[in-house]
Amino acid sequence: MRLSCCLNTKPDAKLIRLGRIYKYGLSGVRAGMPRVYSRSRSNNMSAKNFTLQNPETGDKVELEARSGTVGPDVLDIRSIYGTTGTFTYDPGFAATASCESKITYIDGAQGLLMYRGYPVQQLAEKSSFIEVCYLLLHGELPSQEELVKFDQTVRTHTMLNETMLRLFNGFHHDAHPMAMVAGVVGSMSAFYHDTTDIHNPRHRDIFAHRILAKMPTIAAAAYKHTVGQPFAYPRNDLSYAANLLHMFFAVPTEDYEVDPVAAEAMDLLFILHADHEQNCSTSTVRMAGSSGTNPYSAIAAGIAALWGPAHGGANEAVLNMLEQIGSVDKIDKFVAKAKDKDDPFRLMGFGHRVYKNHDPRATIIRGAYHKVMQKLGRQDSPLFELALKLEEYALKDEYFIEKKLYPNVDFYSGIIYRALGIPTSMFTVMFAIARTVGWVAHWREMIVDPDGRISRPRQLYLGPTERDYVAVDKR
Ligand code: CMC
Image 1 (tube, protein in one colour):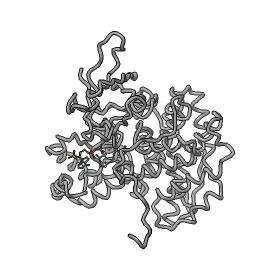
Image 2: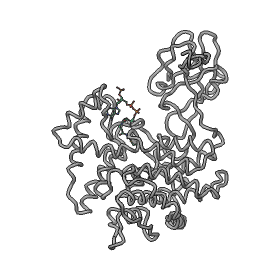
Image 3: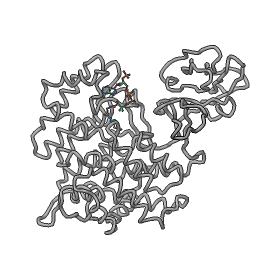
Image 4: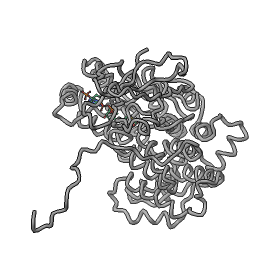
């Protein structure tokens, strides 16, 4: 097996490009530049080691390739800078494993997603969101007793401090709910500083239960503020998803009964969104947390990262896009726009950094849609039909085939949220509620990681070299 890297052509840059190591075979090695070549077979080296050599000086660094339980090996490059004075270059971390993790595994080529080893399809079919939360946090499925206890703990910590609730009055009615949720979650660091000693395992548990329990209440309060209705207080007799629906849609003037079908559909969506290994928002939580910051602030940073349309904001963007497309006869025009390099438009809900095959979450949601609509006694939505046609059209297009762009989870999630009555601006908030458990699980793993250090990447500096300050009247 040949392993390789593309190498920087600037001799003074001392930077090794990593981006293509995983994707391609050995190529582009230029004289005088360091190179990674095939696995060493020499006796005094492990079969798993690679050697990086500067052909000009003959200097060599041995790099260990470490194996996980499944998935590609990783090359441990920690010694490169110390021995060669050269950094590695990998914008967007496309080829870099930033940590060890035991939580979630994705095989992008196979379209496989597992939480703690359990395929997401099985969890979606047989488990509940609260059980998945336990699994992600603790590593194992709970016993009946553990499940009841965990569920009870989360259910009984749903209320917000009244002062925190009043923070919403500081937001304008048309503030985006993600802005409110990020702000209020960040404010939790001001409420609970007595129990946020990150080195205290009991405090870490309290943080986990608290943020899980209060996220739906914060989200619902943001919604109620937007529509100008009184906040609906949580009900501890309801399940996680049912309580969220109650807080969204109950009003003081009449009885509200949660539709169990809607609660079940919400629970399914939450399972599918619960974790996705080192994605942008999770890496943000890890990175913020690596400085030792207050964990609620780290989660607020994750919420901010999730909001972007390339990440969790895509579910809102998909609905807006489908409404913009409007009818099947305009699909070709929008697909052409998405392929045009001079047009910033992208087909929202298509493509993924890791999945180069069907996103299993999208497949599950698409499959569940008709069942949910049928059970809710609703007609199919024209938007869903449009989405199906758009998917069909794009999947036959050479551009999407060649780039392996398939619908991702966000292509269909918004359509179900819409069917449940959730307004478009709240879609990414729904994602944030579900992903909170993933963020917490990764934050906890990061805090106790013996290899953990503050996250602090390097750079290739291309700015001016040292120069003298010039007084303003001399410029
Ligand atoms: N429409 C048109 N072209 C696309 C799209 C798209 N949706 N996605 C990727 N491409 C093209 C892209 O222009 C690039 O072309 P080229 O090689 O000619 O430069 C190529 O495909 C590879 O794309 P990339 O941007 O280098 O891939 P990435 O891994 O950096 O980005 C992505 C992944 C999800 C940000 C991107 O596919 C995208 O912007 N998709 C639309 C937004 C979206 O649906 N995001 C939700 C992701 S799933 C939810 C979550 O977990 O966050």
